[in-house]
Image 1 (spheres, one colour):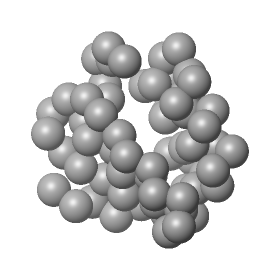
Image 2 (image 1 turned 45 degrees about the vertical axis):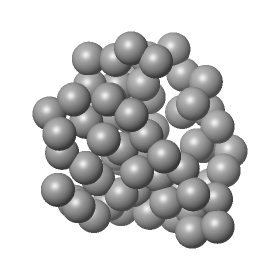
Image 3 (image 1 turned 90 degrees about the horizontal axis):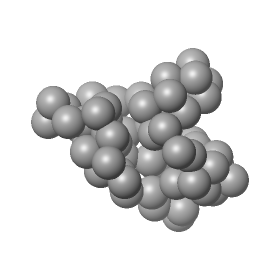
Image 4 (image 1 turned 120 degrees about the horizontal axis):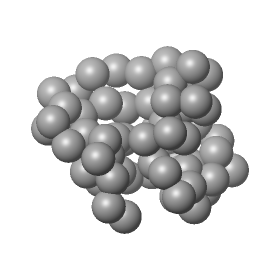
Length: 65
């Protein structure tokens, strides 16, 4: 999953939280992300593009670090 934006991610279906760890070291939790969107993110060829076009505009987030 090489990405210039996303270092790694974890999706927790029970809470619908998608945690994104950015290459910069910043960590954000995106809230109430349905499993279907998390799956599309996982399958996306460009994680950064999907994050910017689908996830950021639609889901609230909390900055963890």
